[in-house]
Length: 269
Image (cartoon, rainbow, N blue to C red):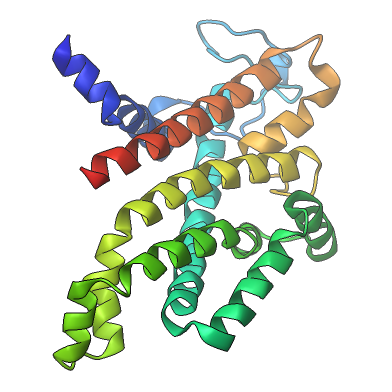
């Protein structure tokens, strides 16, 4: 029982669930015998059964196949946009913490100004104007989510720059980029890791919301969000069309956030 408790406390269960979800999405052709866009009008609107575990939609497409293939798109948007936002936030936060003075003031005021703009309405407007592809959607979501990371990284860097080991590195003549790489970034790695996991959860929800409102991933590409969008009119008569992609979003975001909450204490020990 102690081993199980230790595994849960250290994020073993969230990691396992997330790895399993990623593996299922990656190995979708092996898991489901159906293609996500294969039409079979003879089994339209079919309830879950032994031949179609998650049922079929209004065109006879297998819902399990669409959830698995849609997971590839949703997870890619979540992970890659989170990577972009964390990279931008780390860069801006590190520069603000190191340079201070006017540079810090300008960067932080820009951060506060962007943070004051509601993110979802902004993304809905940009998506409606640009009608983005999946790569552009990754850029839009990632480039509007760096502000929290920048503020947290700046605070961490400010506490580190006056430490003895950083001053010793300066006194030894180490260039600033080397000090950042060898001394500052390793010490803020836990903070960056937590920010990254939480950013993945937020990005997944944003992609789902955008697709749900019809301005995210566009058909014929499947994502969990646009599957919910397409199931709006049949939620009472064919609930499985919304249930399974909705569960996929819930489980992924729940365990991503659980992993993020458990990383910080472990890294600081």
